[in-house]
Structures are given as C-alpha cells and as structure tokens.
Amino acid sequence: MPNLLFTPVSVGPLTLPSRIVMAPMTRSRAAREHVPGQLAATYYVQRASAGLIVTEATQVSPEGVGYPDTPGIHTHAQVEGWRRITDAVHVAGGRIFLQLFHVGRISHPVFQPSGVLPVAPSAVTPEGQSYTPEGMKSFVAPRPLDLDEIPLVVAEFAAATRRARRAGFDGVELHGANGYLIDQFLRDGTNKRADAYGGSIDNRIRFLLEVVTAVANAWEPSRVGVRISPWSSFNSMADSDPRALFTRVAAVLRPAGLAYLHVVEDLGSAENPGGERLTPRLRREFGGLVIANGGYDGERAEAALASGEADLVSFAAKFLANPDLPERIRRSLPLNVPDSATFYGGTAKGYTDYPVWNDSLAGV
Image (cartoon, rainbow, N blue to C red; front, side, top):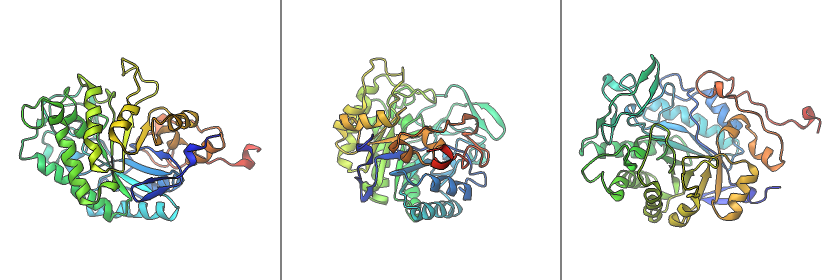
C-alpha cells in the first residue's frame, strides 16, 4: 500500500493532503471566446481530491493562442469564468494553480490578431501542421521578437498572473515545456539569436528568468511553479546539450524561492540516449520541491518519493479518466481506460462522464 504519496506536504503557503498532482492537460472545451464554462467547473471539481490541480495551459494574450477553444486569462470574461471554477474547487476542498503559456511559433496567422505572423525567438519553422478552425495548415516561419518587444511579452505574463490572483487561483505554473515560447528561448534548436537572449546557455535562460521575476513580483515566489521537459522533442524541439542546459536552469532558479519545479521526463522514453534519469540531478540543483511527471502509476510514484527522486508526482491521462484517482491509488483499485478520441474538444463525453469507483456496483 502506498504511504509516502498520502503524506501532507507544504507547497508555498499551502498544505497539500497528498503528493498526488493533477497534471495540466489541454482539453479544448472553451469554445466561447476562450472562456472556460460550467462544464470545465464540473470537470475540475470532480478531481478536487488531488493534492494539487494544475489547470490546462492558458494563454496570457491573444497573440499566445495556438489551438482552438483553449482558455485564456487576458479578458474580464475569462477571469470571471475561471473565478467560478476556483470557487467551486475550493468549496470541494481542492487547491488549484493556473498554468500560463504563450505558444510562440506553435501558432498560425489564423489565430493571430489581424492575421499576422506568430512570434518566436528566431525564424525557425516548426515541422508539421497546425490544427486550426479552418482545418490543418502547415506551420509558418515565425517573426523573431525584436529586443524592445521582449519586455512587453514578459509583462503579459505578469499581467496574467495578477488576473489569476483575482480569479481566485492558489498560484500559477509557468509552462516552460513542450516547445512553447519559453522553451523556444531555452533550446538552441529554436533559439538562433545573436543578442543577449541567444548563444550561451545563460543567455538563452534569460527570458525564462525575466518571466519568473516578473510573475513572482506580481504575486510572490512561493505561489509560482515552473514546468520543463528536458528530453521532449514535441513540437519539433531539440537542443545540443539538454543535460547541461536544464541542469543550469534548475540551478539558476534555486535562489528564486519558487513553489516547485515540475519536470516532464517520461519513464519509458527513448529520447534520452544515455538512459540517465535527469530528475534527481535537477532536484539537487534546484534545492526545492520537485514534481515528477511521465508515465507513473501508484507503485512507481511511491518508489520515486522513497528514492528521493521527487517530492510529488503528477498524473495526466490517468487523472483525465479517473476523477477519483487518489482513492483508486490508495486502495489499489482498477483504473478507467482513457478514450483518446475525446481528449480534445467536444462536450461532456470523455470529459465529465468518467465514472468514480462504486463499491456496491463493483461487488466489493
């Protein structure tokens, strides 16, 4: 039986009843002007037994949009929509952080105000296609941000944080993973700049640090987490030395006093050619709480805590399909199987209709 997973832990000013985190997952159900609605409130309340919920990625500005029907936090209506969700989650006894992102080059002129090019550190075109309201379209070469534009984007993250606070969230997580704007600045496969934001590892980390500083000043450091994905090639990402880069990221973030570092490192991934688990090294360098993510079940999560690899573990698809995942892990109960056909878009099917465990129906 798991034990460490169900020990309380302090995350900033919060005391979590368990170390089981609901990972951020894009669900694309905010169909009206990127405003999360009542269905989203039901979805998050159903999962309020998580030690901590981290919401789906939420764009900080209209320019940060890259997918249909993803929620934002840049209008009054969006703040009010999220406020109804946070109120409901808190009434249900939960705790909830808002994940903030800007997709950068993983956008398309279809999503951009006035149909302009999306922005990025450099004019490096992603491979593949964008799923848009007009169907699949090939990605385009983004427009590199001018030096005087970068502080404006940093300010958008800070403004989004202030709105998240007004919306009743317990904190925010910066999405520095999965090939979006912060990650694009970090990795040399996408950052070809020759100014203060490109070239050396410390230069490429500069944008992340400026965002972290601005967001922490907009609230407080203990209300801010950062998510990274050292090995992920999602959105055609690459770096010449991810070990050196992300070890340095963890070390540079150490003095910031953040709530946590959230590390995506798939247990079954072939993307790490040396096979080394980087999460333990990042935890040592960061010196604070680390959330591990990447293919965990209850047994593997318990082992990660026992070994000191991580302090908390986040679950994605398992939480999507099992609103009562902590109870199922605690009792070693069977899990619902996720329906990948309903992951993105749609209505309640595959969103709020997954059943919770019922002892009487299960014959227990």
